[in-house]
Length: 189
Image 1 (cartoon, rainbow, N blue to C red):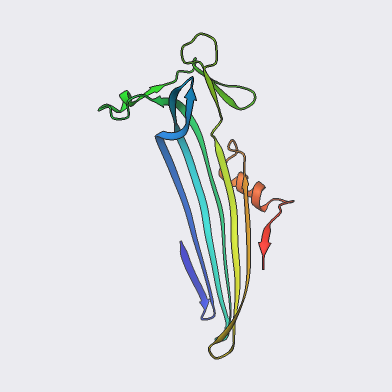
Image 2: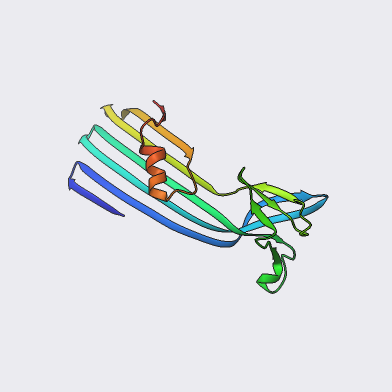
């Protein structure tokens, strides 16, 4: 990130963050299949993007304005579903049973169906765990010291949290869900 102070009264700072998470044993769900537990895991491919923006403006020593805003998006897609069979096995591959493409299918209702014994009957199912979490938070604070030692604060806060489409890339998802038209913000004073 960087900070920029063009005058003594004005300071602007911007701190972007981008992270990638690839995990072969990301927990998905614990299921009960006819009294037999299934500890369902998958391989996750997750990307997270955020940008913190801060503006400090000092009108005079008694009156300041501070703004902070952060658009944030994190989305993940799962693949290579597996069930834990021996969590303490010495070899990593021996700790789980990987479902083959013939054993697991995604139906039209966005539900995964698993046929563990290949008898043509669904043994259990679970919802698609893919996600896209989109959020924009911001605060505006005006501080006025009307007499020495006595301050008055006016605080405005806004928050928008929504779910995006995990199949859409990060930036288009952020733009359409936060900065697009028709967006409703939750704000308070």
